[in-house]
Image (tube, rainbow, N blue to C red; front, side, top):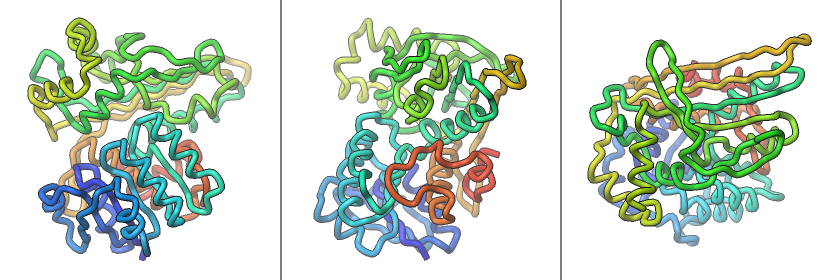
Length: 356
């Protein structure tokens, strides 16, 4: 029995709890500082814990006897969780997209005997595993294009969007610099630019640069590819509308107000669809070739629990990485990149199969 502490009892934390606890091979303790949020956890056999994830003493006490800890709450608290994990020798996982937090986690991973596996979600996360798998099929690589979107199945406003996950994470994506490889060099570019249009199965989408989704791929493929870009997928017109909100109304400099407006005006939805679209271009047998990977993933019911698309893809990806670590299919210590796992191993995993 593996004992796992999940910190953050929001939708992703509760979904991970249901997935791991439901196997009978993991004993999950779900922690959060809000009693009302903890009370929403209905997974049979799971334990709950009231805890402030910025309290180092409380974190160390909660990690006693645990094999792993997962940061599933606000991205900023993951730095505290990672520091405590390093002190306690506990394996660390998170689902953050925040670049600076991941850089801090990397520091705690240096010389650690336990594993530090950040960015275990959809993007960053699964998208990096796919891109790495496609890239390895070429003798020389010209371009990697990563495109991901969490979208409402039934858009009903001018943004063509509903909230499906963390608003703080969404704002981060739209406002922070984006790492890409351009002309063979790692560079930072502004978010909400490079707009493009395409169609998958007859449905039209747009995509534009956003922060964080590329994970560590730019580092991994530095000097190995001419172009590597990550963009977020939305329905056409979303980018222009968001530029009005962020630029013309200047809400990009007032993040708390921006969050309040978004959460007050844009409803959440569980009727979502996750679009994953990765394309690799390069030389195979002396010819320029292209390989693509595309998925459209909806919510599903697993073991009596109903999951939205974003829940099943994010929680499923993180649970798969935990599973793979204890199956010996990931590096067992230090900083672990998402691309350190093979796509075949991931898709064969009982949690990763949601992407198959």
